[in-house]
Length: 213
Image (cartoon, rainbow, N blue to C red; front, side):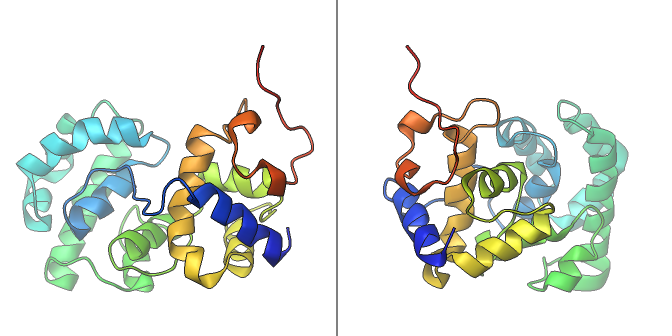
C-alpha cells in the first residue's frame, strides 16, 4: 500500500472504535508486563482467566519473586508454555527488584533485558503504559500486514518497519490496537470475513471472501 492508502485503511477500521484498548486485564505497568509475557502463544482471554488469581497472590515484583517459579506455575497451569512462563516471570520480577527498584523501566533496552521480554512485549508496554507510538507485531498484525498489502514482510520486524513507515504518525499508537482487533475478529486467519470489513475498499487482498449463504 501507499501511505495514502494505508491512512485510508487505518481510518476505516478505526471509525467504530475511537479509543481502542488492550483486552488484557491489568492495573499497572507490572501487571501489564506480566500479562503480555503470559500471552505468548496463548489467547488474551485465557490469560485473563489466570492472572486475577496470580496478581491477588503477588501484586508486586517483590511478591512475585518471593512466590517463585513453582508458586507462579501452580496458578497459571491452564495456559500454554506455563512452565517457561513461570520461570521467566519469577526471574524478571527479581530483576525488577534488583536493578530497577521494583519499577518497570520506560526504556526499550532495559525492558528487553528482562527474561521472557522481547521486542513485541517491550513495544506493548511502551505503547499501552507509557503512551509511546510503537507497533507491536503479533501473529494477527503479521498476517494482516501481509494479506492486505498494508506492510508485507517475511519477518515481524519487516512488517513493523513497514507499518511505522506507512501509517500516519498521529494514528500510529492506536493503530497497534486497531490492527490487532481487526485481525482477531474480522481479518481472521482461516476465513477472513471480508463482507464485514469496513476497510475492504482499501485492501489489496485479491481473494476477498464473500458473505456466506
